Amino acid sequence: MKLLHKRIIKDGVVLPGNILKVDSFLNHQIDVELLIEIGNEFKKRFDKKKITKVLTVEASGIAVATVTAINFKVPVVFAKKDHSHNQDSQLYESEAYSFTKKQPYVMKVSKKYITSVDTVLIIDDFLANGEAVKALIDICHQAKCQIAGVGIVIEKTFQPGRGKIENYNLHIESLARISKMDNGQVTFL
Ligand code: 5GP
Image 1 (cartoon, protein in one colour):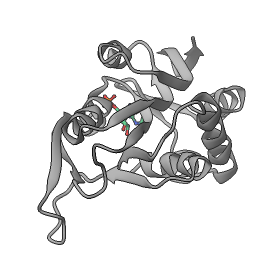
Image 2 (cartoon, helix red, strand yellow):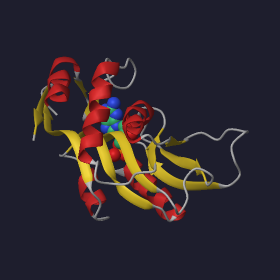
Image 3 (cartoon, helix red, strand yellow):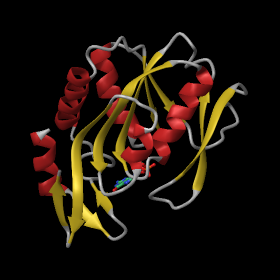
Image 4 (cartoon, helix red, strand yellow):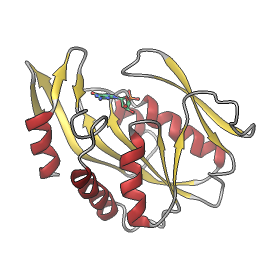
């Protein structure tokens, strides 16, 4: 997706530890016009599927999932990371290891919101080691729903995420695929 490539080149900042900072347009301050284009692109790429829910994880997946779900006219469900007192007691849970925080966490989704009748599109902002997407797939397996595919805004192809997700034989679409981040420079595949 050319518009996204251009924006990453212009405003993305490469941090130590293979982290790309995109918080001026994607996950802190949000460029809504760019996000709408991202949602439209996911609609095109998954248009043949009869999607009933878009599933993501808080916090940075929510905006992207929302602009995507608008196009499919379906709800967004986001996995929660923290335990809250008003949370449902009937939960799907799956553990993942956080790439940015370097610690494990448990994703939780109420059993009310994903069920066996659903066809779910999984969306996230980044694919790095594949932990977040794997946990979302695990939640879908617990719910016995169909998975329409996995949509990623920025994939770092030099990290093992795609390899892990390909084992599930799912339709994966990434809008920007970064093959290298050397000396502060981003190279696309
Ligand atoms: P994974 O679970 O694939 O290892 O990492 C994906 C999750 O970690 C995403 O939900 C995203 O929030 C975060 N993440 C991974 N790599 C990056 C990165 O380079 N930059 C930012 N901002 N977040 C990342």
